[in-house]
Image (cartoon, rainbow, N blue to C red; front, side, top):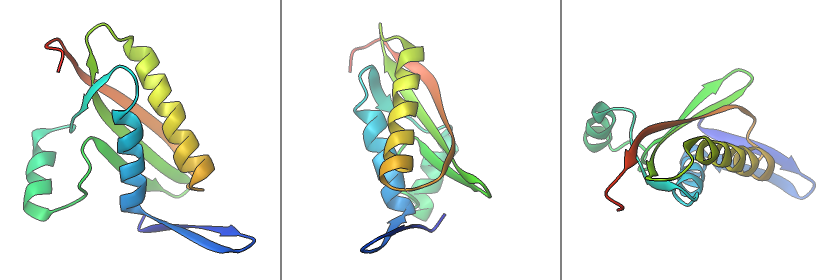
Amino acid sequence: MTNNKKEHSMGTVTVSKKAALQAAEYIAKNTDGVAEMTDKSKRGDLTRILLGKGGTKGVYLIKEADGLNVEIYVICRYGANAANVCKNISASVRSELGDNMGIPIKKVTVRVEGVDTLGR
């Protein structure tokens, strides 16, 4: 996905991959119960540093023929209901990217990589 175009009566709106990544990251970070974003592996951090890719943490977009798969990796706050956190992130990302930005979303996967017991 380099760009996504949506036709409107007044013209065309194009959404870049970076904008979609940043929107998904912002939504996830600001969902109640999320302590922080995390990458799916340390290799992702090294790749980002060496290649300068992305600029977002914990959000991956995979383009398929019938839509976009969004993978989000978070660390939940201690005491938060992880299932509800995942449902809230998924619904919000699907709404923002799909309904508001016009990006066809096939699937949103939210993975809890840990629990923050230190209360950061």
